[in-house]
Length: 186
Image 1 (cartoon, rainbow, N blue to C red):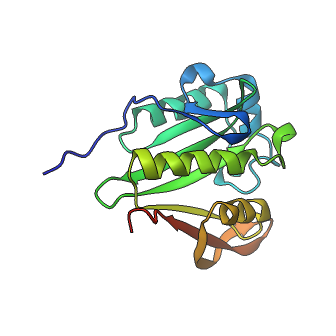
Image 2: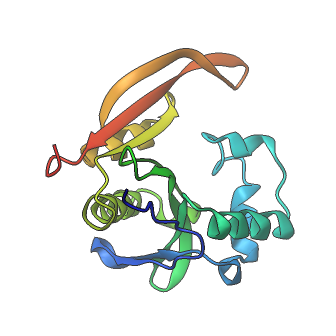
Image 3: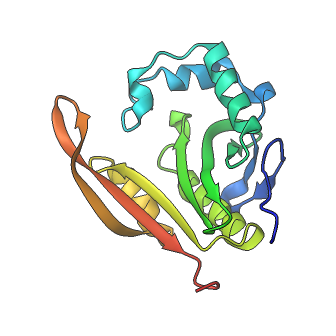
């Protein structure tokens, strides 16, 4: 039987287009701006993090937990040597060759510059080429037009809708689920 790798403590680095560097985030990368992003209602608007207040210690504990996880890789997104957001491969399942993708750009000055798309492209390449995954999944709120566009641009297709799944600004909205298959492994 093939041994299933464990990602606990593994360090990875990916260079992408648009001058982005993606690398495993460490507790040394946690900074006051990162904590501020996690407490900014506009940045967390389309995430479940909007319900929580985050301290510096909370964010460090989150990063430490991801480093200790056997099936998650949390990348920091670095642009011009500055940490601007995160992208994560979660629930990596090397038996089924699948993982979940999640991401955010915390630095508002970088919104709309195509950097999330470049980060997704880099992580998709890593997941399909290095990890040899067959499929990536991602979800978003139906109101998150930016996420819908960036996923579609990166070859993800809408695979399902959970009706009335999310309470958002006092009303129920749908959760959308996207997938992208590694055509080289199909």
